[in-house]
Image (cartoon, rainbow, N blue to C red; front, side, top):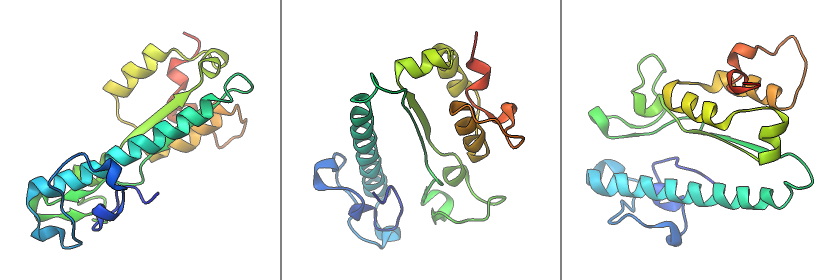
Length: 165
């Protein structure tokens, strides 16, 4: 899976994921209309949703045997011509929010939530009200796996505030 990396967005998904049309079907994205550029990018998101759903459905087959969790986080966002900026890679201090605000998703089996005493309503609320970053990923995984190390900082564990409530 190549995700939503440009400029060849149209090559990042199968035709079955082409929901939004017309789409920009060229590497010369600056020559595309804004609508077709947004459409082709959105089609990559449709495909990512499909792949993640497929992975989760596959993991569910094992949830009665082991506690399972999945974290998905994008490595960066993409600029689609806002203020004349395209793609990604702008130095962070100058980068527009389109490149720095990224999706993150956590899915866990019901037994995983129960074992870790995580309140789903708290986690949803936290997800809607607070920002997290890649800095949280390492510590959240350590917490999920109950790894004890001096490198773990519970303040950076996304799940910690929603446990044992």
